[in-house]
Image 1 (tube, helix red, strand yellow):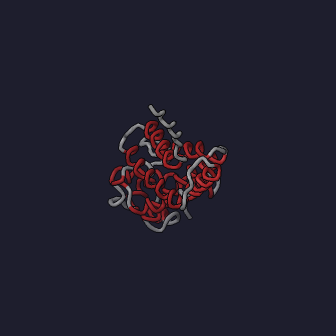
Image 2 (image 1 turned 135 degrees about the vertical axis):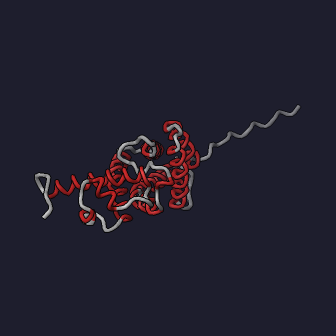
Image 3 (image 1 turned 180 degrees about the vertical axis):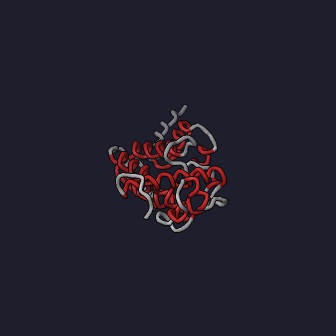
Amino acid sequence: MPRINADTLAEHREETWSRLRESFLEAMQEVGYAALSLADVARRAGIARNTIYNYAPDKAALLLAVVKSAVEPFVASLVEESARESDPEERLALIVRRTVASFAPDAHGLPLLNAPDELLPNEVGTALGACFAPVLRVIEQLVEQGVGLGVFRPIADVRRAVDMMTGVMTSVRRAVVSGQPVDLIAAETTEFLLGALRQPARVAPRAPRAKR
């Protein structure tokens, strides 16, 4: 029976998972996903390799577990915070601001979200898409709300519009990860997205010229 270095089995599992997660991220930074091995991760964590299989059956599953453990709490807090804001434009601005900040290289708690693309295998994109699904639903709702209030222009396919907005955020992530200023990019992104959603400004008709 494995030695338990905690008061309860649940605490022991949580402590082991924390060491395993940090060791996996450390190996990702040093050698990249393709080159790291479960044996190396176990050695860094100070656990037996077989212990890893209590948390994930293989390297890909461990990667996805690490992604979810980092991103899901962030997404839950973002959804909860955005629910406190009733104005659709302010809700969108909040979501953009928080998400862009999470892309910053020095952001805490989201090391895979803000890692350079070359460190991220394709599985991460799929996992992140699943993790951010609740946020996308919030954006769909706020777009529909804005249209209903007449703040946003009529949109034939809201889901398609949200997909386009997601594409914008993917490009923004690359810019922030490369070191461009977070506050500026968040402000520019917010104005760009709101500009695409808002009702076009009405131009007052010109008064007829007086005949000479």
